[in-house]
Image (cartoon, rainbow, N blue to C red; front, side, top):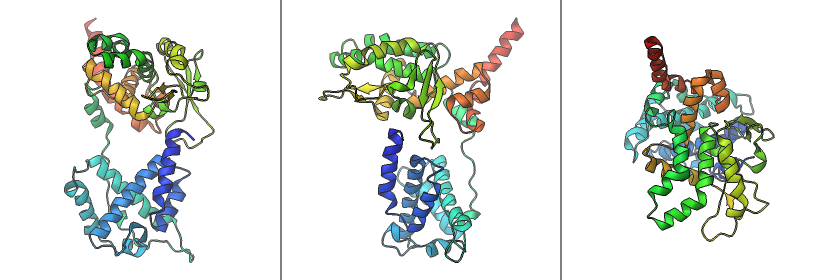
Length: 360
């Protein structure tokens, strides 16, 4: 099990004991099919919903763990409408439409299980009446809308190489008068450029980058072996190709990984950091990689660029040379529906190509 899953599973185990018995049963039912991260989100959604039921007097329970099936059975449609209003207008900070839709979907999944799958000792459904079956949840994440939000916020064409070059040289010139920042930059520039290059030339997720180990790299065949999101087979790592362009950055980083970061032999992580006051290098965290990319992106003139947008940048560029099915496979998407966003992101590029052809 990779590091993120281990952490999420621990948090899941800690929080599930504060849920009603029927929620615990539902999570056990879903555990073979869904990641601990997804199930942890379910638990957070149920904590919030049960807390609201109690606050509104719709449950007499003194704690979330004591909410009953009978209290769920007698909920009315106006109660669900009230909860949706609570999520959208009465909460501090307000939830986005996407977040509200996800929270309602979590409830639908639980209620469906209780009313259609789980049985009591007499073989009757645990929940006799399912109010959530009446709730329509509209699809919010349309590929075309996602593409519209991403346009202008990802790297395009020559910018992919320019960004890596900026990490290796340009950033150092921009901070030349800041000795402390310059020292940190000189220490980490090969590693940072390698991480950015790997994402821009393979489309890895940040969690996949964090979990990479030294023995996951096959330089001669330009292959990485990663635990893919949503794949619960902990015995199998998916082979993912990276472009030739990343080999130089990988060689440069690997040459200094052990000595510069004082990395012990027992440390398997590919990407390591040497925290202040520490004597040995250890695996970089997801947060550290995210902050690192934002730091360079801001100086590069792309303040909206994030680690995930580096993945989008690769995917858009990759799709221009390949079909949607190869792009789906490279990115590790569960379906082509997710990959459709890149068909819309490349619309302008395709139209420009047609115009150039007509002028010839």
